[in-house]
Image 1 (cartoon, helix red, strand yellow):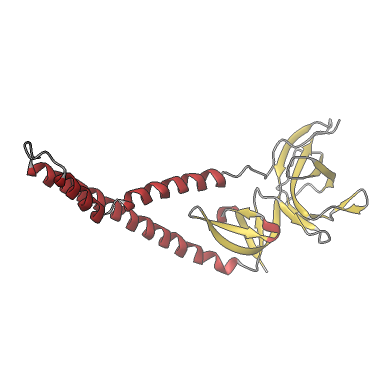
Image 2 (cartoon, rainbow, N blue to C red):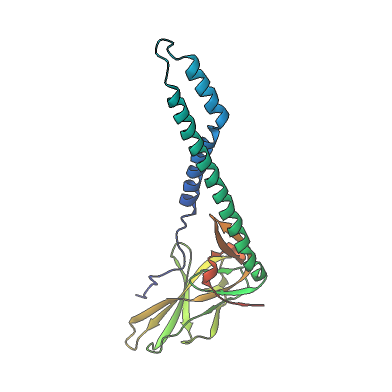
Length: 228
C-alpha cells in the first residue's frame, strides 16, 4: 500500500470566528455610543422630576453621576479614534505590496491553482538521504488525485495536470513530496513551494493578504520570491 502525505498546505480558516468577534465588539461600541450626553441629560431630568419632594436626592450625587458619565464618554471617543488610526495605518501598510500585483510569486506552504491546461510549477528542497521521490497531488479534502516520480533536488519541476491521461478539473491542489529510502520506506515528506500570479492585495481582519490566481490566499511572509 502506498504511503499518503500527512502534511498539507490546506488549513481551516478562522476568518468567520474573527469576523464574529469583530461584529460583537462593534455592537458593544455601538451600544455605548448610543448613550450619548443628550440621552444622559434626559434621564437626569426625568430623575429630578420624579424624585420624592420630601426626600430629595443629594445634588452631589448628580454631580458624581455627571462626572462618571463624562469620563466614560471620553474613553469611548478615545477608543474610537485609536481604532480609526490603527485601521488607517494598516491600510497604508498594504501599499508596499501593491507592486507585487501582476508578478509571478513563489510561495511556501500554499496550495497551487490548476486552470485546466497550464502545467503547475513547483519546487522541492530535496533530501540527500532519499533513494527516490514521489510527488503527490491532493485535493482540498485530502483525497489523492495522482502521484508520479520526481527529481530529488531544488530545481523547478511541474505537474502537467494530467490524471490517467485526462486533464484534471480546474481548481486548487496541494503538492507534496514523499522521500523514500533504499528499502522503500518513507523517510521524509515536504510541502512543495508552488508558483502563482499575484492578483490582488487586501485586508482580512486588519491583516494584509496576498491573493493569487484561482483565489489562493496567503500571508506576505509566505512569498519566497517574485518574478515577471
